[in-house]
Image (cartoon, rainbow, N blue to C red; front, side, top):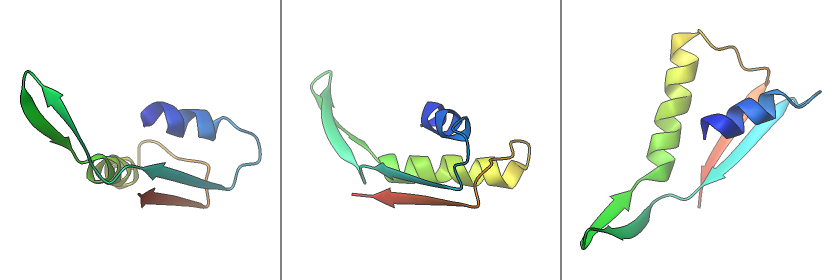
Length: 67
């Protein structure tokens, strides 16, 4: 997701960013079912970026949605 944020930041005259991620997905790893909570992870990353204040994003707003 970081790569998507950086790529969108480099597009000229972009004012808003919308990113859609899967709410969660399941897969097998070594015969064990794994659950990855993509939306929660993405939200935590955005929260960390904005809370730190170290990386200024050039957007007026960001929409993160899960499907």
